[in-house]
Amino acid sequence: MSPRAASHGTRSPRRAAQAGPDGRVAVGLWLVRLPPPPAAGLRLAVDELDAEERARAASFLRPRDALLYTAAHIALRRLLAATLGLAPREVAYGREPCHGCGGPHGRPVLRPGPGDRGHGPAVHFSLSHSGGKALVAVATVPVGVDVQRTPPARTAQVCAPRLHPGERAELEDLPQDRLGAAFGQLWARKEAYLKGIGTGLQRPPRADYLGTPGRGGWLRPPRWTVLDLPGGPAHSAAVAVRGTPADPCPVRPLPARWLYEADAARVLAEMTETSETTWETTSETAHPTTATRVKETHL
Image (cartoon, rainbow, N blue to C red; front, top):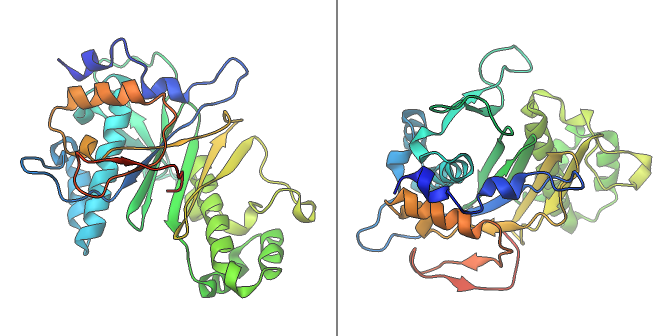
């Protein structure tokens, strides 16, 4: 069975990322954790990555960072493959022109695949990974995600001059023990938004207000919705989407076994069948075939 056949007749992640009857955009969000050691006979599906991705993974100094990068990019390829009806190896990336210099190193985008004549809605995606966790977003409108470890209060103090005046004022009102977490969440919103509009940090962080709505009379950027995601005690996370997203935007955990399976067609079929469900967080601690349901929704 081909990957295209695997997605036939099932509800693909694309369905989770299309506008509903009221025009709201349902963004698909998926969590990837640092995978545990595989069970006997399993290996990460690294053959699905392109040469650039494999070279980037090999460049990390810490094996843990290389493993997370590899897992995140396998997940991204498989989710996009399930969305587009392609094999993971057929997913081709390109870059938009840089907003600063016009060079070919702007926001990552999808290049047309084999036989693609531009039919159907555009598919946008965003990926972020930090501290053993990664987030993938797929939508039919521009989208950005960010996840990062919660920084110490000292980081907030050092970075404060780069922030919008309204954001600085909010942080100055906080006690020291809340400063790191508050700055981490603010910065996650900011990076998600800057990824979404395609500029990254080439746009000055102080140019846009991403603080608490209604504080000090400041307004967030128009035509964009920026939402905090539950990051737990050690991480901050956010998603930015152009337009109004469906409420809620659940984060669906990807079981680690989806990163190891060699049979991509079967994995893609599983992804398409489960992508529409409301998931509880899945904690996988033993090996890729062992999963325990818990009722928390934290990353």
